[in-house]
Structure formats: structure tokens, C-alpha cells
Image 1 (tube, one colour):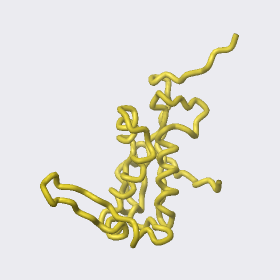
Image 2 (spheres, rainbow, N blue to C red; image 1 turned 45 degrees about the horizontal axis):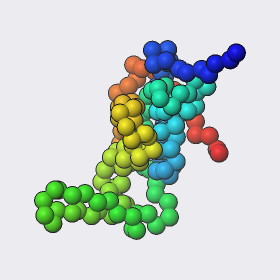
Image 3 (cartoon, one colour; image 1 turned 180 degrees about the vertical axis):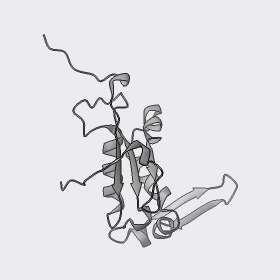
Length: 146
């Protein structure tokens, strides 16, 4: 009789990958990062175990928005005071805080529970091409044409 294989948290081998966001659409970068963070690129993927790898995203300031998202899409925040609703056009948000824009996009693609919060901590986003994780020997991830 065969049994279904489930990865154990202590058996998972983690690697570090670098994704270059320069001149790539924001959603494509976020989707690939979420895929690596979840571990869906590995044959041992198990939905209830953090089997993913660490992801470093560089050149966040050069990420693109496609279509008319820059003008039409709006980010809302609220200060929790009466009349405290703030609205920022998405293009302005991405131009001023590209790291947060990528983090927000990736977080939305991860599970919305304790496991998703733990997985999200393995994401590192940097505005320019340099990052302080050279000691981990990260590999450059090639985007697949799907």
C-alpha cells in the first residue's frame, strides 16, 4: 500500500534566490516570488508546511506597472480617526515606496494565516541592485516563460 508523502518542517532544505525586478511587471515578479516562498517549485511541496526558499528581490525601483493601473488603481489607508481615510494613486505609491508595493503584492498571494505570516518573513526586498545577503550565496532565479 502506498502512502501520500508529506514534507516535515525539519527535513526541508532551504536555498536563497535573487529575483531581478528591473523592467518586469509588478504582478509577474510578485507571483514568482510567492511561488518560490511557498515551495511550489519543489517536488516536496506540502500546503501545510513551510517548504519554500528565501527570496531576495533587487531593483524594486525599476518595476513596471502595465495598463492604466498607475492612474486608475488607488491604495486606501485609514488613520482610525474620523475622516482619516487616505487615498493614494497606485503609480505614486509604487514610485515613492517600491519595496512596500512589492511586499504588499506578494503578501496578497500567500496564505492569510499563521503559516503565511511565517513564510512572508523569508522575503527581502531592496530598492537598488545591492543586498547584504552575499554570505548566503544566493542564486539568480531565471523567470520561466509560461
